[in-house]
Length: 191
Length: 157
Image 1: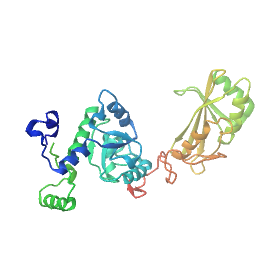
Image 2: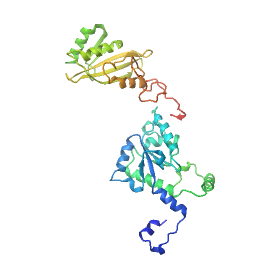
Image 3: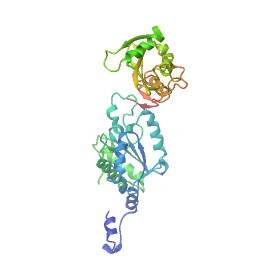
Image 4: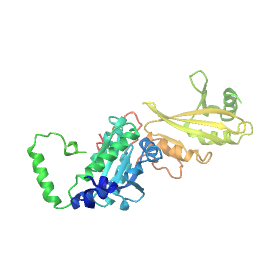
C-alpha cells in the first residue's frame, strides 16, 4: 500500500496519498487489534514470554483486554477441556463482530496428546467455534506466535468491508467451481 | 518411630481391625486395615501422644479391577515419622467413612477420589465432583469406564 513509506517522506509524490477507503480502514483495523487472552495450559506460559520485552508482541498494535466486549479477537492458548469448552464458546459469542480466533498449540488445534484417550478434552477448538489462524507447536516457539499474528493481520488486510455479502458470494462461487478439496481456511493468504 | 512399631501400637489398640503389615514391597511400608475403622484409627493416630500424625499428605484411590482401594499417606510434623494406611472396598458398595473430621485436608482429596474413582466417603459434608463438570456421568479413572460420545452436544471422541 505504501502508506508507511509516504509517512516517512510526506513530500514524495506531492504529499498526496492514494488508497482506497477500504484499504485504510483495514490497515487501521489490522494494526490495532485488541485481544481477549484465554490462557488454559502451558501455551499460556509461552505466551507470557511472547508478551514480555524480548519478543514484545505489543508492537503489532495488540493490547490485552480482560473483557470480550472490548476485544477484537480471541487467543485460545492451551488445552480446551469439555468443561471449559462451553465457557470458550460463550466468550466467543460475546465478542463484537468482526471477530477472529487464534488457536495456539496442538491441543487447541486437534486435542494434542489427548487426541485418542482424553475423555475430557475437546478434540480441536474448531468443533465449537470457527478458527481463523492455527499456530502449531507444543508449545509453539515465540516466533510462531509472531507469524500467527502476522497471518491474522494479513487476513484482516484482505477483508471486504463494503458490499461484503455480494463479494463474499462471488468468492464462494469461485471457490465452489475450483478444484480445491480442502476447507476454505486452507486457502493461501497473500502476504 | 519406625513403621513396625507404629503397627504394633495399632495392633494392641485395635486388634482384628488391623489386617496386616507389609514392609517387603517396593515403596513405603504400609498397614492394611478394615475399611470401616478408618476414622477411629485416624483419630487415634492423630491424638496418641507417641504418634501425633497431624498431617495428611494425600488420599490416593485405585481401581484394582476386582475391588477399589484407598491409600492414606500420613505424616507427623512434630515427631517426623510417616506411615501408609491402605484399605480395600468392594466395587459394588464402595463406602468408606470420611476422615474429614480428623484431617481437614481430606475434604478435597475425598472429593477427587469420589469424582475419578467413585469411592463414596460416608459423612463427607459436601461430596460433589471437583474436577469433572457437576453433571458428568460415571467415574473416569475406573478401568471399565467408557467415555461418552457427546457432552452437551460437543463430540468427545
